[in-house]
Image 1 (cartoon, rainbow, N blue to C red):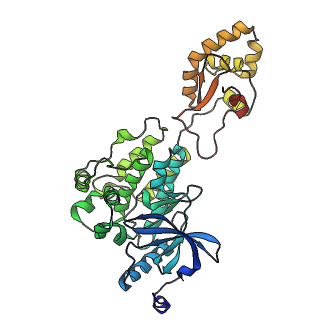
Image 2: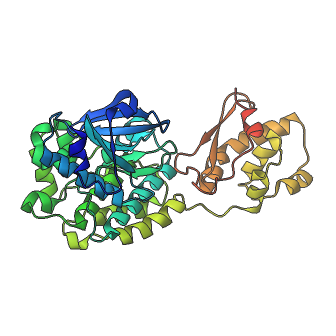
Image 3: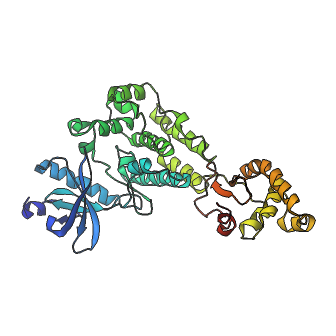
Amino acid sequence: MEKAECSNWDMGLLRAFDSGQFAGWEKVGSGGFGQVYKVRHLNWKTWLAIKCPPSPHVDEKELSELVEEAKKMEMAKFRYILPVYGICRDPVGLVMEYMETGSLEKLLVAEVLPWELRFRIIHETAVGMNFLHCMSPPLLHLDLKPANILLDAHHHVKISDFGLARWNGLANTQDISMDGFCGTIAYLPPERLRQKRNSDIKHDVYSFSMVIWGTLTQKKPYAAETNILHIMVKVVSGLRPELSIIPKSRPPACKNLIKLMMRCWQEDPSNRPTFQDITSETEELSTKPQEMPQEKADDREFNEGKQYSLSQLLSQLDSGISQDFESAEDECPAAGPMADSKKRLSGISSIDSAFSSQGSISLSFGKEASVIGKTMNSKSPPALEPPRARLPEADVEGWAP
């Protein structure tokens, strides 16, 4: 495309880039939406991303639509919205900030995420969507799903690709792979499939419920279905993804998050909450994903870094963590190796109940008392902020075989 043609675009605050301004072109993603390249801006000395349409031949009408979408993204400058810088002329594409971690979709299948991170991702997505809906007029995403939720190097959310339905939606099904199409269908609300009516803000709320389910389970909704018609029938019939797939070893706060998710996927759009309501709930849940029990005085002393022998620890556990370690030393002086051995054996039976009730850690014993490993209780991961007090590393790691 000629520069003269680009100058006729109403670019607003957006820039027009030439391909010569970039180096190190590397394809990092592709699909029905097109291709995404990681590039380095030669003058800015930083990495950016360029998202190009699936077809290399773009007419003037498509270019105009691309500019309009870029302008919407530029207007939606916000902490949890992916920044867009402008349009590249050849190849034609959106020039955006590069996200080191990639998409939430890829992260969910790559590793088991800590619960506090899952809660934070859900909350930040809700805050970003609330910002879009607070614009005047509200800006609808209409394609919210893990593939369009990007994460920076610190795993903070950047929502991308809103308003790009002509690339990734029902209008261009011939350009979308079966996996991509099923992914989109799974996040569409029943009223959109049933009536083909114009979407509103409750469309995004329903899609968000599928994002919650996928983040909690780290699975794709309706993944077992390979026929898109079967997915559509399930959604229209009121069948939602199974709750039983959500891990049983989850923090107590998941109960309220699941209730919120179920309200978001209600059949009647008017019964779904707004993102104003959603963010209020997710904010509270994300700050206390575990509903931590109040620490006892002796727990606080232990967490502050006091050093205790193994026999003292086992004796303390045997009593149900009900005494102060200092007083235990005075009241229960050492009685020799035989007494210590009895303490170890009697202490083993009470360790599970003592530590499980505190939601902290569990200890496993081998043949010798020195063979002890530290494992985190999967039901109670550490809170996000502030970090939860933990056992001093020197106290526990010294016991590992």
